[in-house]
Image (cartoon, rainbow, N blue to C red; front, side, top):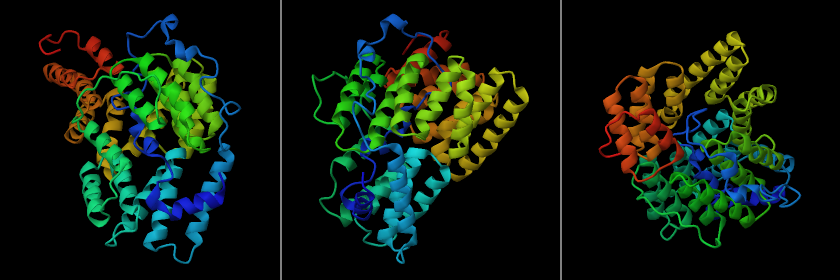
Length: 428
């Protein structure tokens, strides 16, 4: 991927954001997934979906070549430097390009300071009326990522007004994702087509398969999706391998997930989602010495409290309680900062941390805040877990029933039903 091509795309933002809508809307695909929350009803190794045993899956760089991670990162960071040096760096058009590049950098490498920069510049880029072409779409995507759904919807309405005819597939996909997060998406069967016409179609089916508890269906769709890349951008394939790894982790196969996270990092070194989940899987499988440097690097790279908590758990498992206590305190401090800055975004992420820290009151407060914004199955599961941790068993059963009524059945729901097996069966 040539640097000049990146620059053209950044300055011509109206026709497409640097990251595909599939990646932007991933929402980490982990709602309801708590660290280490491996379901009890895991598949035996022999029952792994056959597609996971196919040679060439995940595809390595030699089999499906893309731009190397080093070249991609150098081009992106050079673009950011060039845009910042321009004499018109604070004009709406260049602020848009800078915001998009900063957001792409954050999505690949996870530095929260980069996300703050992207938010500041994207907000500035949409102030003019009319806004530069592409500015409203980018801000809608960032607002949705931050779980600020009302703001994202308002911006999409403004987009339709200022740029009639501009509402297309990316905007419809964004609205569908927000409806799903708010619990307004009807349960759909995830029948697997013989073949897909696009990667986005395959990923949409894979997501539905995971949410219906069908690992084989999800894995088959992810497998097909890797052959539907449209250019040499390394992020989409790294993202796909990571999503397959996350699905395996959610279904209780951290040992198998490891090779997918490793494949993602081969394609995009420094890809923070893959690195942190690899560290988590290595911890779960007892490979502590391999996990520790990954945690150290990804914490330095991102400043993310979720990873500090993961590192604390690793250190505790290694018997290094004093260091574990330090990182637990750091995670709490950083969560407090992020909850003050972006409460809608981090309420969901912080629930599991406070449950595992023994602070059930804070966990429940955050779970209730989250359910006011998001009513998807994962949010109901989190609320039920927080209620159970706080000793509110009857209310936890009510939240479990609400999760069941969504019609979705991700693996975390099965684990919750085991945890709350004494709930009255009516409505379950």
